[in-house]
Length: 204
Ligand code: URA
Image 1 (cartoon, rainbow, N blue to C red):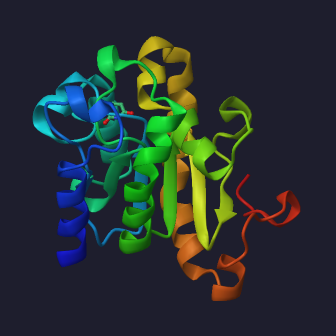
Image 2 (cartoon, rainbow, N blue to C red; image 1 turned 30 degrees about the vertical axis):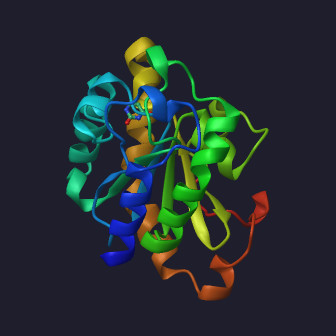
């Protein structure tokens, strides 16, 4: 896709924030640009920075495993991050970095046009629904500008705290049904900004 290649090229040459100074490689995203499902994590880590691919380290193994559990391969979905360059020592991305990188993420969302955006962890969830708590909201799909946003814990969180793993597995298990439901929604329903709780999808 020509426009997608253009976004990747712009990311590769980006110097909008200081993360560009220490990166080895930019990590634009990976998977199918035709997918209905986009996963958004936080930021590249060491392995991602080495390979130029998102979620290829330990957290990536968890993600790949959970996808396989619902019959999906990485190539069936699109995977990206809030920021496309590795923060030093894997620290959390800062708001200025997220802001600088949002042009690229917004362009990816517009171009790939996923029906369902799965947010992994609190940073990507906050992009769509700031001020809400991930532990309270995970697993609850909400409509946002015509798309479903489905918040989940970050796979890395389950490595630090294995007790979170069943919740993440549950949320993955519900994903295929949610995708089917959102594809079946009439266009006017899908165009509401934030669906009020009483009108949210029936699964939860
Ligand atoms: N790897 C990524 O690409 N993103 C994360 O958020 C964590 C690990």
